[in-house]
Image (cartoon, rainbow, N blue to C red):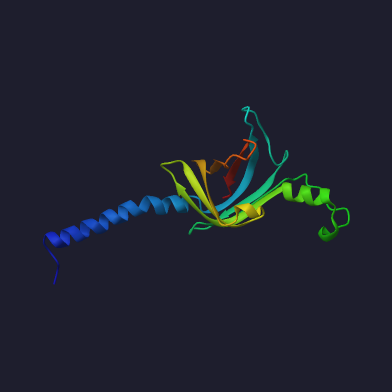
Length: 167
């Protein structure tokens, strides 16, 4: 027996509207899914000048799956090797260069295209203060290029990351 009448129409309309309203959010999540390589890791200084934050040729990889889980790594290419070859016996300067020359974290990411933002829900990070935090960042996606601004540091400097999707 087929359902007809106002109640059946209301249910069908509700289902259709729910699907249409949910579709953009699903597409937004999937639109970032993939493997991204770092193009730039810059810093915008309080005086408006822009400089390289992780050296002249930073390296990085951002992996995002279809469910929004991500893993991000950024490395300064010019990080010196430990003279001893053993990080347990490295000098303070070697440890400092290793820590300041890298940024890594993982968790989940969501995107709000209309607001021009993305949000990292960071589970773990090389900077422990970021663990179990949520960071909203202004972002822009143009084709296969994603850029975003990290929240300002205590000194007012704003890191800017630019990524290119690998095909």
